[in-house]
Image (cartoon, rainbow, N blue to C red; front, top):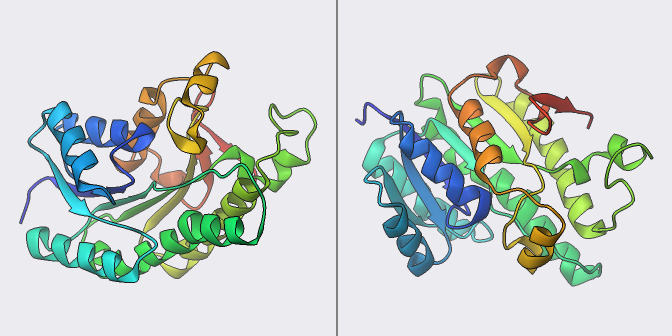
Amino acid sequence: MSAKLIALVSGGNNGVGLETCKQLAASGRFHVVMGSRSEDKARTAIETLGHKDITFVQLDITSDKSIRAAAQVVEHEWGRLDVLVNNAGICPLTFNREVMKEVLDVNCIGQGLMTEAFAPLLRASAAPRVIYISSLLGSIALRTDAKTPGHDEDYKAYRISKAALNMLTVCDAWEYPDFKVFAYSPSYVVSDLAGMRQAKIEQGAETPEGSAKGLLALASGERDGEAGQHLHDIGGPGVFSW
């Protein structure tokens, strides 16, 4: 059994997920399992990072079969999971029935099923942690506060899915009292989410390093006392209202 902590990051081949894999592995405390639908993209990312403590696992969180298969790989290779970073997500710009089905499946349903599937492996850890990647756009309190930056931005489908994810976080914190369960909102970062990389750069979006640093702190237990809440590091460590 590995002496290092085992951390799985879904959607780990791009953006905040990729940078989180990088920082977890570079810390020397973790062996990282990079979950990705695309093996080619994941292996290219791992090769670019050049770190021996990152392993690829095929993972599509909209597929129960894929989730079960990934859990079986982790069980066979390491026998436990210490940290689950539910990072995979999408940000559609439209709102209709099919879009809502897809965004809820990826941003909420698949996330919860990941935690259920990996719960037996998390229970084998001395200090299991589950981190859901949320967003301030999912906060009902901030949406209704005219003083909050971005309160008037649309992203209706994305907002609804992240609000649902926040409720999932609270439910799982109750369902798994032996786990440290968090919702975490990254900063506004440059990524391929919503397919607007260049526009984000022009709008002053940050690189993913700062958000990944915040996730490393959560994975390392530095904010265990704030488990069960919606955390962030925007302007310093803090807690968002649900």
